[in-house]
Image (cartoon, rainbow, N blue to C red; front, side, top):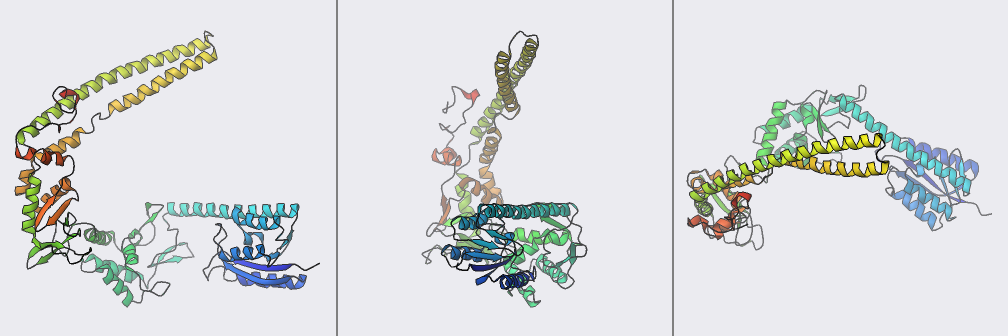
Length: 507
């Protein structure tokens, strides 16, 4: 009989060199000695440093099983069943090789599995125990982490500036790197440093990643935003109070976060100390590019960034004062006449009063009906006890009563809430539309830009130093019907209300 050809497979659960450092060497020594003692023919050795918890994540194991499938070997020599699989998918792959007779034997250090029904059953049980072990270990680890978090102990690998004290299982300050972290916070809190500047500062102090590179800006930003440095930490998306010693004060941390907030790239706020309210509001009509702002000779100018094709955009500069006039003129066209605004506010108040009265009446009726149903349910139960009705009739009648009662309870809950949620937003809109001219004439540039954002959204364009754009609804109704230019009441813009029957065009 031709001798079996063995693949030797050794695995440890991590690719970190300082963990399970002797596991592979110990497995190889023991398995090679076993092969020599038993006269096993090992045609190739496979060594892997990956976890077997998730299926399909071990390239060496996949290669080994593929080679067995094509007949390069017909047996496996490994230390224990859990070296082969800790998940049902990889375990099934091994069992499938046994079922197809391509794998005839699996030799472990203390036992072996032959390609028999009993052998496959025992191997299935061993794989089940391996799966149970890894799941139980995961649950116990998570439980231990939750307990540490409740005690205020950080359960993960220490961030830069701290060390994991193995004696007490807590964070300890790294005396070498903690001063660098503190200085990085202090530098950025002045407002004169950028993330690139902090990155270069850390490089001059010899700080490198595990790959030997200078920390990237994203890593620096993450460090400066991590609450662990002032004594708290985030775990499971929740902020927890830690018991470790802080490196920076909460006040210094808040100053750094304020700098981040001010420098947020999507925020049209301060840049180099000069506010530019129209940033993020207007685009170039010629090329579609964004409009940026810059300060020249004490004045703020807005221009096309010219970052979109074609880059030869000829849209000229425009001073902020001129742009303010253009935007003010646009928003002024969307003001409601004073008389019309006052009439709408009066009608809204009348609608609110009527709705409240109607809701109170309906609420009283619903509550009365609910009490009636409760009494019916009590009488129905008494009739069942007295034997006046059978169980089938009782269940049918009870179901109808409970169904009606539930519907009335939900309706009661709805009636206690605001029945006209559109009233307040509409009232706010009317008040805003009523005072547009005042805001455009005497308001700050920031207020005008905010009003333009509400009216036009992102539809404002700059063309030949002229601002133009299409207003979003409901503002577009005012301009389309010429309401801003005439006192004649337009048809069709007032809200549909119960108290306006016979007077509203929307009814």
